[in-house]
Length: 154
Image 1 (cartoon, rainbow, N blue to C red):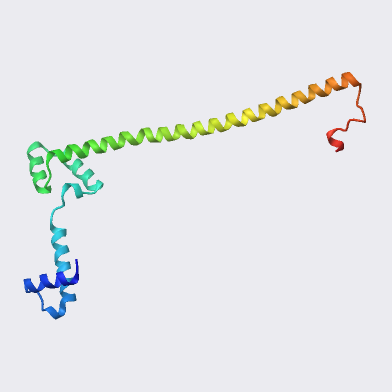
Image 2: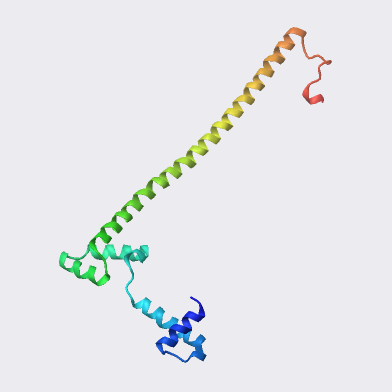
């Protein structure tokens, strides 16, 4: 809100003199914030903690006391039912997420181990093939031949 508008409002209300407009604006804002804090909140402005507290308090009241409680808080019974359902829904939706997250971590670990096992199987198969080839070469050409360098000699 522009300063000019605040000053005009204050002059019309005759709260302060126009030359002290900054002090008057601060005073006006303090009074306004105090009025707003004393005013009951709308149900849609309630925090989740306040909603939970209201649901718990209402669940312990009898039918006649519940009506008085709702009037005092500025609520309707529908608000309490909706909030109760939201809380139950929130609890139900969080449980599968944790399980799914745990399963996905487990499945990632399983996939990682399977890839590692596949890689090692390939390496083992290659080594076995080289040993078979070496034995066949020895069978064809005889014993260790000095003309074919081994890996250790390189």
